[in-house]
Length: 428
Ligand code: FES
Ligand SMILES: [Fe+2]
Image (cartoon, rainbow, N blue to C red; front, side, top):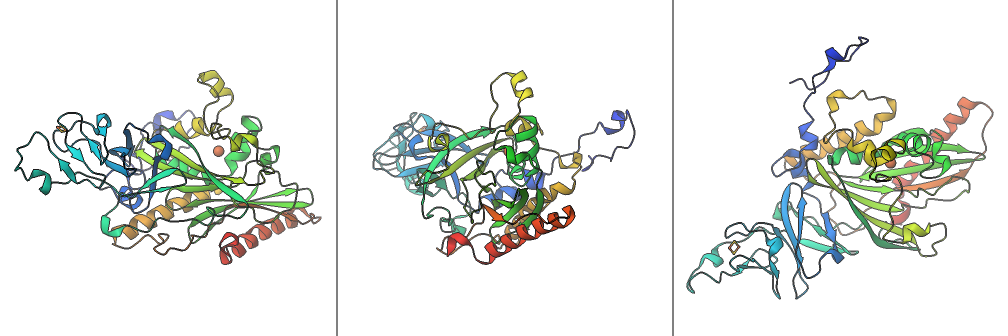
């Protein structure tokens, strides 16, 4: 099977373009033992919210693995293989206990670290439970969210604290969790594709953010120590609005406020959200967010402070196909790229430089893991990790010549980004 479809130059030539190349397995397959799956497993991943863990266990699928999460009655969190080590009954039906979880079928009791504490049907002198462990993963609870480390135990990094978590004047709130039935990579790529904001979110579907997003920006992309950002620069009257949205490797996005309009000059302001894109399996992905809320709440829309509310334009407007066709959201755009978008059918243009850069960063990370190294961005110290997402609005009236003005806008955007990378504003 070809890896790339022919570049079709024949009118009415569908006949020459019927074969569907294979997906790019290296970047899209995330199950155990796959190159990308092993890479993703080197990082702490959020798996569910704390308030999902009540008196009943919760079944989860993460990185192609069936798991069960629970909080035992002594308050400890367990994330274990779903199927009981005895004969495979799902621990989703288990009894959360004072210590660990007990399988509903024959009562084996399993601790949060996989220790088998009791095998009630076995003879009293059985040593089976002392010799056997159940599969379990270490967890870390932060900001109402349960994170897990699913990589090799001897490679476990410290839980990363990003510099946006403890930002003066802001509080952090767990937000929404929702699912897209498609591969993780195309969801991450969306954040490095600011042109879709002008088209999908403004021209096609009516202003889903602010009107000003409809101005097609000057675009630049730059690698950061944590991953990459796009720099979208727009002329707004006497101001230059510079917007930077970032992908933190491998699967965290930070998005600047969608209520920005570029009308009032201000310094670096940081993200409105940090959102993980967690593969459940190759064709299904969970999006899970932290919201950054100004303590003053000035400028923060009321819907963003209400955890029940949803960010606009992320999910279908209704369940009705016609409504979805008339006002598509990110969901329709990304899910309809196919369950796994086929790179061999794409025709990338100049605005897709962010996509190419992001894929290269994923490949670099995969290669590092294959060669037995830490991925470059993996932090092993306890210091907050600098990040770079923000809007900055600079007072800078236009120069006469349009081309010179565009050149100036690009320079202003690039210079700001380079300064932020040299001196991360939230890590001072
Ligand atoms: S299958 Fe779980 S105890 Fe028997
Ligand atoms: Fe979008």
